[in-house]
Image (cartoon, rainbow, N blue to C red; front, side, top):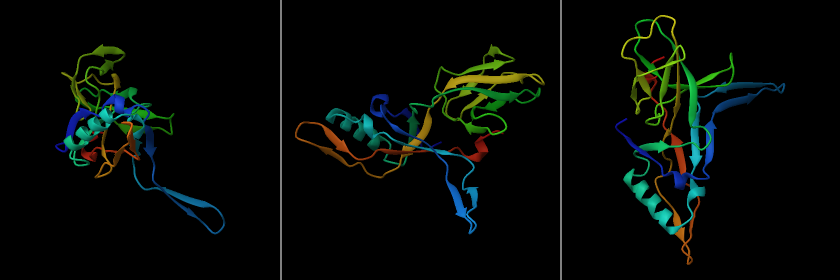
Length: 204
């Protein structure tokens, strides 16, 4: 992503953040009371509000610096979801030819599972296993891709363990921060929207 800065939203400013996945659904109620439901999008999208972590004038200044450095919502950045930041996930099965695999995290139990594409693994946390034996791989920490030096053999079971951040951007074009006489700050919202990956990067 050329419109992405590989920096993380300060953890101490994110403390107490609220948010999670959003699933847009069209729901039509029929005249007999039954419902017809259709998903508007294939993937969920995370939304957060980081306002809870802002407590002082110094933190307000730090937020202002971070916001200006990103040009508001123009450039994305990393955000650590306080609840959902680790994965122990399957990568797939070797075919003797493929060397590059995409990191994902699965939710739920078969047959009702959702595979979420992970594009921002945390440096130094990615561990990859072939038939439960850890192996060395190259990791692209900006695309969430791993590359084996040689293709895993046919039928080999591949898995990975890693921490990850969520690529987000500011949802608003402005900050509205008030400073009272006692040096404490008031701000209504710091909304953040997840930046979903291009489908061409899924490597399914």
